[in-house]
Image (cartoon, rainbow, N blue to C red; front, side, top):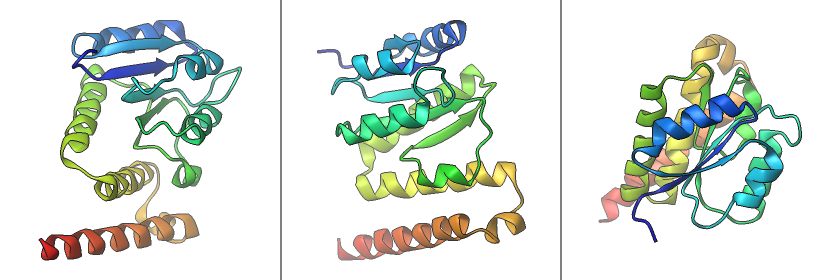
Length: 174
């Protein structure tokens, strides 16, 4: 078994999937899938991180994500897509969201951040980071004023406060 984390790169644009695989292949084991069906076939407990395109012709990335989670895989999922994020990302069980075009630096930095979190974080910290990442993604797309008028964003704010308070209480118990 390899000591390197394994990344599943899923994108129906072959050139892009191969480019991402090349970018991360120096530091990680890489498995590539050019469609949703193949992604689900190649998914296994050995996969640590999934780079998932959202818009694919056979099965959407959202559907692939649901199948991955329904099967019980506890990997990190980074949505890498040309689909601009909307409030619907609040409901996605993802760890981060990147809008194409993506640079090598962006991709490798986020993957490294996920790895650090996995070493030092527990489930609560992971959820906190996921909420924070979703808020940041949405804030890049719309103003705070627009977002705070939505139920979905207010729910994220509430969840973030609740998780933060819980973690602070947990630190006090140590």
